[in-house]
Amino acid sequence: MNASAQLLQGRRVLVTGGARGLGYAFAQAIAEAGGRVVIADILDERVQQSACDLRAMGLDVHGLSVDLADPASIQRCATQTGELLGGLDGLVNNASVTNSGGKTCEELSIDTWDQVMQVNVRGTWLMTTACLPALRLSGQGAVVNLASDTPLWGAPNLMAYVASKGAIIAMTRSLARELGSDNITVNAIAPGLVLVEATAYVPEARHRLYTEQRAIQRAQLPEDVSGAVVFALSNLARFITGQTLPVNGGFVMP
Image 1 (spheres, rainbow, N blue to C red):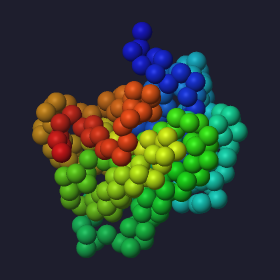
Image 2: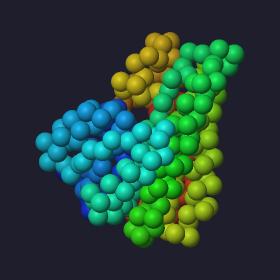
Image 3: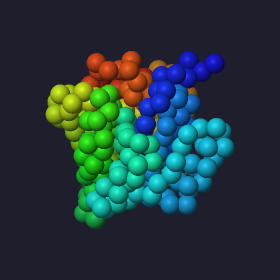
Image 4: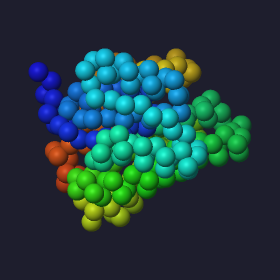
């Protein structure tokens, strides 16, 4: 029996960027731990198919469309999630864009910088605030922000993404201070380079760097991160807030 099978029994959780990759893995793990899940993504058809696939496994998962660059879409998603689940206990801010890879700070365009910040930073902020009324009513709300270990070691040629994930870490601490009185925890998970569809563009040399310099010398898979997310959403983490947990096999040990 899965050790986490009852950790999130009945918990209602929204996972952004849940159509594929890490978000899909998180949704599956949360639902397998007893949670009821909405996955939201800009990939309209893909998110519906992913939700269908997870329901075929006997899991309680629904799919919604969301565009994190559009405040109205974010608010609509939060409202629809509350209607589908009858409330909200957890939010996993997973969705992000990584389209600044391979560019030096001099090559990086202003448009790219603005897009990354708009989706990764502003989108996380707006989705969190849109979900706050429901999370407050829960009495056991938990927000999990997906950061990255890249700002912890200063990954080169990825500056917009690294800066955005550094902002997520800072935002996590500030939100934890603001929301503690509402009994809402806010923590960040900082994965290393994970083998998912979204990282297919990453040069083999960067993959090799991660693998060879980890304490656990193998590729990182989505399921390596899922347990940390489930834990952060659960009652086991009710007195943990404002923290950033690197999950990268020991590549970064802050």
